[in-house]
Length: 219
Ligand code: AMP
Image: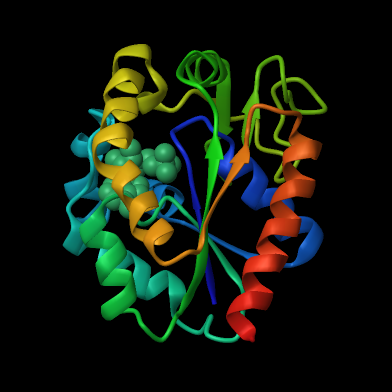
């Protein structure tokens, strides 16, 4: 069963999905993380995605479908938190049709206003090894410059977190991804959570909402 986590870049989807995976045993699948791994390994998919991601635009739908088929394989009995997909209406429809063996219990939007998103992203750093996200002031690693999770000292700014790319990504979200919310709203399974609160407050709310959606789907 899939729970779609959606929200603009910087809304905290990755951080929250990591917390829910660590504390509650949910499985996190992030299409952005999967694409970055392909780029790092220099695969054919990585070569297609690299320039597109660097500009803050969307990678073609057929590439994403291949990635998702691989990432979801064998997860039929688990609750998967899907971070970063669907990013447009066509992807939402594809998930429902081609990937119907992974039913979507609902979508949860983390809502954060644009100014807040920009200030969050401007301080964001990630571990180049394991992708764990941090924020220079709001959520720094325990030891400066060292990843809490894997011990790597490669904490870097993502190339697409540069201010001009962020503006493009926020526009892409408004234009392409917001219609995905209407798609799930029409099915009565779209929830919105105020993502501007502390990490722990958002976590509690998110966990309860995931449990509600999973229960309703299972009934
Ligand atoms: P994220 O880590 O979710 O912010 O994704 C980083 C970038 O990966 C996006 O700006 C897109 O270029 C690409 N990407 C991730 N997921 C998708 C998707 N579902 N469809 C198209 N492009 C995607």
